[in-house]
Image 1 (cartoon, rainbow over the protein chains, first blue to last red):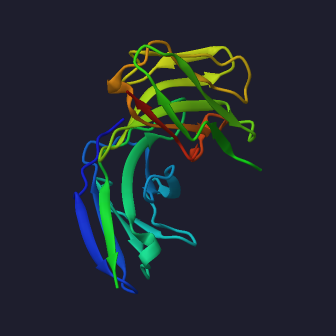
Image 2 (image 1 turned 120 degrees about the horizontal axis):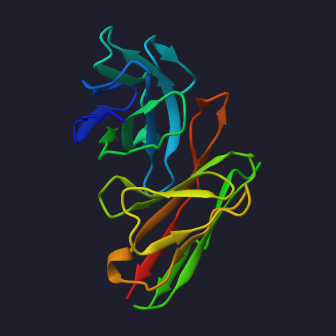
Image 3 (image 1 turned 90 degrees about the horizontal axis):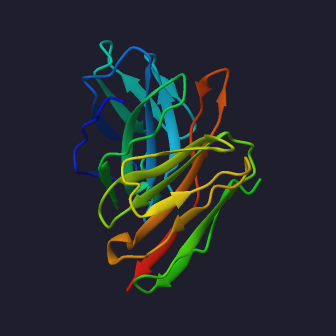
Length: 111
Length: 115
C-alpha cells in the first residue's frame, strides 16, 4: 500500500469548514483513498472513501486531485465534536489487503 | 447489530501472565484484524485473518498469537505478558464481495496495562 503524509495538527474555528490535506504521491491506479477519524481513545470511525471522483456523504466531502497524488477531506461546518485525529489511508480496492495507519492529523476545533 | 464487540474493556496483567482478548463481529465479515495503539501513535497491525482457519502476521506480531475457528470470532492471545505490550488493542472487520473491499468497522478497544 502507498504511504501517506499528513500535517501533524490543525486548528479550525467552530462553524467554519475544516480542510484536511493528505499527500499520497505513490498511489497506484487501483488504490482507493480512505479517511477515518478517532475521537479521543475510541475505535476509529469510517468517514468516506474515493478512487478518483470527488465524493460527498452526510459527514464530509473528499476532493481528489486529477493526478490522484493528493486529496483533501472537507468537514463543511466543523463542530467541537469533530475534534479528533483524522487518518488518511490508501488501500487497494480489490483483493485482500490491510489498512495501514500513519500518525494522522489532530484537528482541534475551537469555539 | 452490535457490530464489533471487544472484551474486556480494561485489564491489568502482571509480567509473565497470559490472557486472551476477545473479538466478535455479527456482520458476517470475512476479514478481521487486530491492531495495537501506543500513546500518541497511530495503529499498528498485529495479525489479520481472511476467513475461518486462515491467519497471517501483520507489522508487529511478536508476543501474540491468534486463531480464527469461526467467521464471527477472532481472539488475540498474549502468552507471556511484557511491559512493552501495554497498549490499547483494537479489533476490526471488513467485508469483501466479488473482490471489492468495503470500509472497516472497529471495536471500542481493550486497554491493557502490564505491570
